[in-house]
Length: 286
Ligand code: SPD
Image 1 (tube, rainbow, N blue to C red):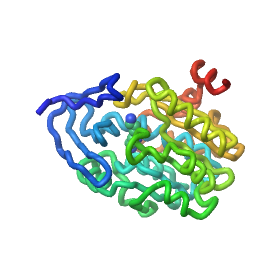
Image 2 (cartoon, protein in one colour):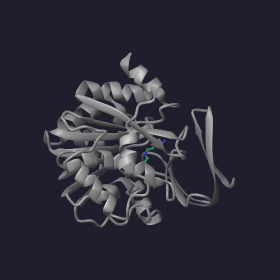
Image 3 (cartoon, rainbow, N blue to C red):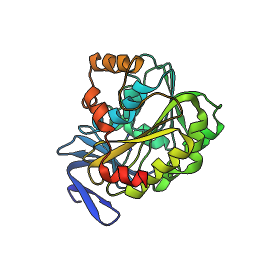
């Protein structure tokens, strides 16, 4: 057995971590689930050979998926997370005391079971009474959901292949717009702006059909293809993404004071993350 675990992205790039041992390697109904102990980043989860998360690296990704939306949404009583079976995103959502009801909809029950057992440092909030875990198809969930139900919807899917592909599609994104309150906020992981440029731009263009505002934001995730990552933020309300003010600023400052504090996210990161690289700005204007 090789002592390296490599993710080969589309046959054109490769990222690898030296591993101490393979803890889980099993095929679920949906995908290959692998959990390894790495030499540098603690335990890591891969789905179908793609790195999803690693203990010493996951904070940036999960904080950036969750807090820009949770800080800026006018209300955050009801929150939906689609995907995110490792528990990192819900852990970050539940830092916010205003959240009353959090639904996690994960297609693959085995991901949750194995992550709860083997990645307990990532999923630290499974016992929170505000959280309900549902197993099923996220696209179906938003289709069946009462209109204008959620204040915030977060999509923590994998890359747009396999079970996560539908989460980048028109029907699902329109379903999310319909399931949000009129001023609700949507956020999702949006791929590598370099290696998945078309996916990234298509997602933004699709969101702009269903939301008055849809903005990308950026940050580093070293274990994902290309190392530079993106998320999208969208709303039909009037709240601004990039400059939290009033209640949003209060929430951000409360988060900054909370213990344990975020490892990556803060007010400066929030504002800077929404700055657009010129090549993206030009592509979106075209
Ligand atoms: N290239 C992998 C992108 C995966 C994004 N979601 C990861 C799930 C972590 N909770």
